[in-house]
Length: 279
Image 1 (tube, rainbow, N blue to C red):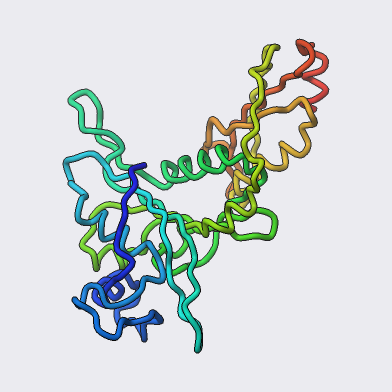
Image 2: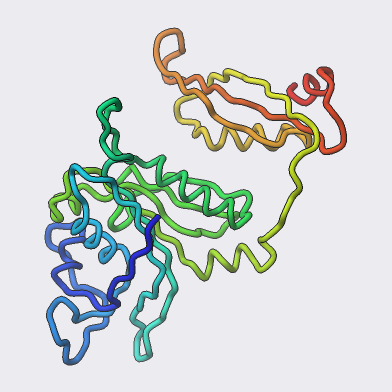
C-alpha cells in the first residue's frame, strides 16, 4: 500500500459528505475559534473521511487501482478538558486490481484483497488467534458488509465496504473497501517481542484435502478454527481452496474444500501418523 498524509483539520462539508445519513445531526468535533478556511475548521475525529477524499481525487477509471494507508492522530472531544488523542491506522482499496491488458479481463479490487492485506499485517506482527466477526452497520461502513477484527475480547478494528449512501455523495462508481485500527491498542496487544525468527523446515510436509459440507450460516473462518483446534501439533496450516454452492447439496448448505498441511520438526511423517492426525 502507498502511504498518504492528510491534514489534521477538516471541514464540515467533508464530514457531511462522508456521513451515510442524508441530514447528519450535530457534528461532535472541536471547531477552531478562528479557522483560516471552511475546509479546515475542525479537528478530525477519524482518518477515514480525509483518506476517502484523497482516494476520490486520485481514482482514475482506466488507471491502476488505489491501495492507500495512513497513520495519524484523531482528536476526540472531552467535556471541560483537552481532547483525547488517539493514533490510528486506516487502509483503503478501490479500482482495478491490475493495469488493463489486452489478454486479460479487467477485474476490480474487492473485500478479499483488503482482507488479505490485513491478514498479512497481522501475520507480520505475529498476532495469532484474531477473528473476523460480521457486525451491523458502523458509520462509513456498508450495513451487512462489515466485520470486526477481534483478538480474544479486544476489538482491534473494523473492516468492510464503504456505505452506498456515502459512495453516492462522493460520486464514486466503484466499490471502496476500508479498514480502521486503533494503532496503540494493536501494538499493545502485539507487545515488544513480536519479532520471532523460525528456521526453514528440514522435513517435507504432507497435504490432505477434505470436502466438508456445512450449513450456509457457518462462517468459513469458524470452520477453519475448529479444524486447527482439533488437528493437534502436527497440523501446521489449514487453507480453504474451494467453495461450492448449488446442485447436489442440501438446501442452505455449502461445500468447503480444505487443505490440511501436516509436518513434524523432527522427522518425516509416515502415512499412519498423518491418517491418525487427520482423523
